[in-house]
Length: 222
Figure 1 (spheres, rainbow, N blue to C red):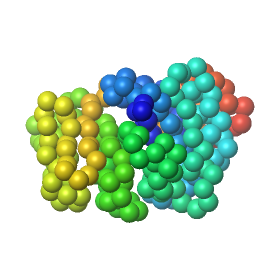
Figure 2 (figure 1 turned 90 degrees about the horizontal axis):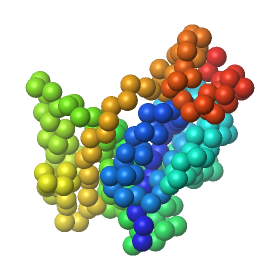
Figure 3 (figure 1 turned 135 degrees about the vertical axis):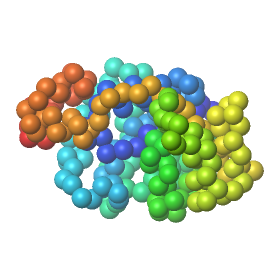
Figure 4 (figure 1 turned 90 degrees about the vertical axis):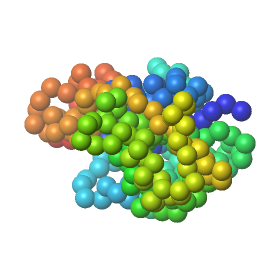
């Protein structure tokens, strides 16, 4: 069965950094389809207003319409209440079956907070992880990313994980593997884009043209 990637987020808005990153991951891990999954109500982002789900879905659909192997899933939008990743993974596992190779894609900063997520242990039982880092992020003053991740796994998840430097993968006898992958740095963020739009600064170069046009049409982030 083909590999399936799950890439969640608020996508408020989707931008070129998201797309470049996910396409790098898709190519490196030979993933047939990556599903971009916008959160309806993200549990960790309740301190600011978020664009309506319908608008974020529409922007995602526009962004991926010319990109093979990227699809948008309404899984979390269709669920009521807060968007919990463990429930999303359960839905995809049910959809594709127990033998499917599912990969949950997220950044290192988010991964080292995963112990605060709902029923996180079940995530490590049901899905493999691809943890994205940036080349050179392990500076002299801080440990390399694999050491940071090893310490986190030992302290918060299980001390049974062992790092294989040849594959960049943490392996465990009972839980799913955790893959470490350095992506090309892209200096763009959804927060920065919203700030540019709000201050009337140029922003169109940071987004797919169709997404920028949608934002202007709808008057979002003004």
